[in-house]
Image (cartoon, rainbow, N blue to C red; front, side):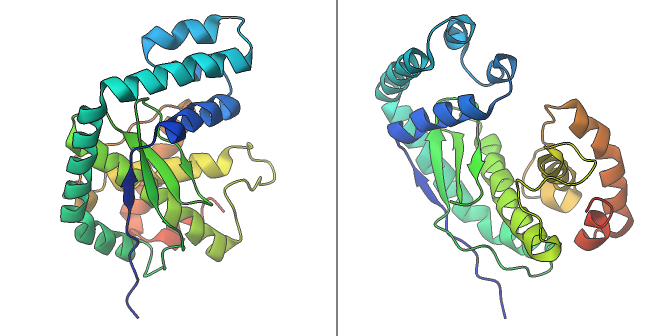
Length: 235
């Protein structure tokens, strides 16, 4: 039975992008990490002694002003992303189907929200994610969408195959071990030639742990290009 591919809805929502900052700020370990994704003009907020409420008020005003100022640009970018995704989605889903051995995509609405920030988190349960509403690099934007979609099926696969969820903590492993494995797996696939025929991307590694894990996982994938063979070394 053929796998049913999800349809992504691309949405522009000021309120969702405000929520993006609030959640990112809540779950980030330190302000140094946030500085990698926020515009420089907002760095003062991170260094200040403002209350979280005051910080949110400042960010809310900034987001509203930015969306108003760049409305046409954001809408144009989102339309271009949607058009490009429709052009490549069949090739993408066919390759994903091969990687995950005809594993069915988890049910969900699959909504992508345009963001003025450079942070693109996802919600595994709700099947929502963020992408850039301002970057004009169409290949980067499409690769971001594909990256987040890869996370959705990865976490569903390991849930079914190993009984592991995104928040599962394994014995003698760091609390972020599952997340680290998922990110490094994405990097491996993003540097794989069949994938790069669709997306011209090498992925980006923000953490030392990812760089440390990457060579071994690349080697394992090169040996067999088999999900179970690779994941059995980690779970």
